[in-house]
Every structure is written in C-alpha cells, then in structure tokens.
Image (tube, rainbow, N blue to C red; front, side, top):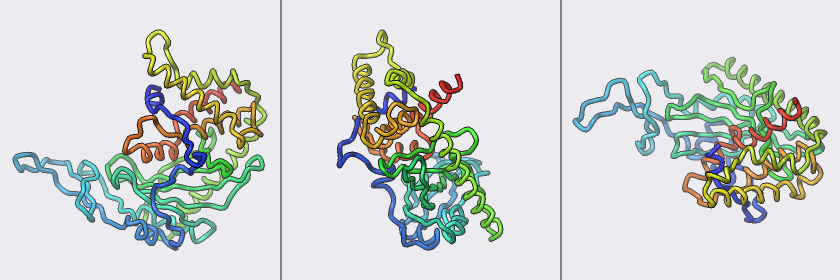
Length: 318
C-alpha cells in the first residue's frame, strides 16, 4: 500500500500523455522474421556466462557465481551453483512458430542493464464493446536469478493506449514457459501460448460486458480510490495528504476523459480510468529507473489496477 503512495503520480501533459507503456523503451524489430533476427537488431544477441566469485583475499566463494554479459563482462546477478543459464536465443526461439502464423515481432529491449530481456509480439486485433484492442504478448527472460522465461498478456485499448491486463479469475495474464530445443516441443509451446492468449481475451470480453452493466456512482469510485491510496489524517504528514489529494484529482480527471465518457458511471469506466491513470502518468520525482520499473508493473499487472478490479468484483459479489 505505501509503495503506491510513494510513487506520487501526476498526469502528464506531453502531447496529451497518451503513450503505450513501452514508449521510448526498446528497439523496433518489425522487419525481423525470426527471434534471432529481432535480438540482433535490438543488440541483445550477447551471451550470458556464469563466473566464479572471489573474496577480498582472492579465495573463491563456494557455490556462488555471478552471471555476466559477454559483450562487456558486466555483472547481471549473483546465483547459486544450481542456476542454469537460458540464453536469449534459446528463451525466445519457440516464438518463431507464432510469427510463422498471424503474429509479428514489434519491439525488443532490456531492463535494468540487461537483467531482464523482453520481446514483444503483436497478435491480430480484437474488438471489445466496439473498441479496437491491439493484443500483444510480451516474452521476458531474466539473467539475475529472479525468475524463469515468462509470457505476459498486454491487451491495449487503442483509443487511449491503456493496458487492460486484468487479473481475471478463469484465465491467466502471465505464466512461465518451457525452453526445449526440439521442433515438436516448440510447436506445442507456441500452440499453448496462442490458446491461453485467446482464452484470456475471451474472458476479458466477457468481463467487460459484465462490468459495463454495473453502475457505480462517483462516490462509490471515490471510496475505492481511498482504499487503494489510504490516508490517515491524524498521523500522516501534510505533504503526504496533499500528494494523495493531488493523485485523487488526477485520477478523476482520467475518469472524465473523453475516451472513457461512453462508459461513464459504470465499473468498466472506473477500470479504464485507473489503467489510464497508471499508464500515462509520471512521478513527481522522476528517478533514472522510473520508466523501466513502471513498464514492468504495467506489463505484469499494476497493483492499483488489481486492487480496483478486486474491489469492484467484491462489490458485485456482495
């Protein structure tokens, strides 16, 4: 909860602030026919090596290693002896089977100095409540020992560039994937990804239909916002209270935005307002890693959006 408040968002006015989450990150790889081509175009075709660690006396520390990038020997993470490196070309090779169909590569990049490498593929567009959605799948590979190869659903509502990857009850918005070398396994994994992506979009469409019929007053939405960004007027500093009030004003500006007006007074409108808020805002104090960190939150599911969706579904259930 405090982490949400500490982010201290404000609405960006740069050319209306409507950028896709990965705006300014990564490299366009739309001409790439294979994942290996995409990695080369984006400068991500380096290898990762596991190297021993030595203490200040030059003695090797047992069972601990550092992962390093072959291009510059920079350290990506500290791992145990059991850690197995998955090279970027291995992690993403099965995605070529997707591109052989209707998908295409769009963007590739790295976060946190190469600790996380990502590749974005675009699937055919969908329509939800007469709104066009661009359906993206993001594949990520990590080299610091923090995770496996992951797949994240990132549907974008085109009219406002909002990411609507909700934590739905029946389908998953992110999952881990295998990295097996033989062709049959790659084909199977590609089919599995497509099936899960289609299932997710189908449930998202169903939920949009339900939420568009759930009426919420501005007071209802304000109560939910206060639960997500709580303030204790007796204990919190004036600065924090003022910041949260500023956040609330910014959020309600999003709630009244023209592209959300047709869903005004509904739960679907409130969800879209929250995604607008977290996708297209910046912190008051912008750190060097802000854009990368916020991108990661949006891709894997932003806590504020998750909490809003949870509060709405609880209200419906109650």
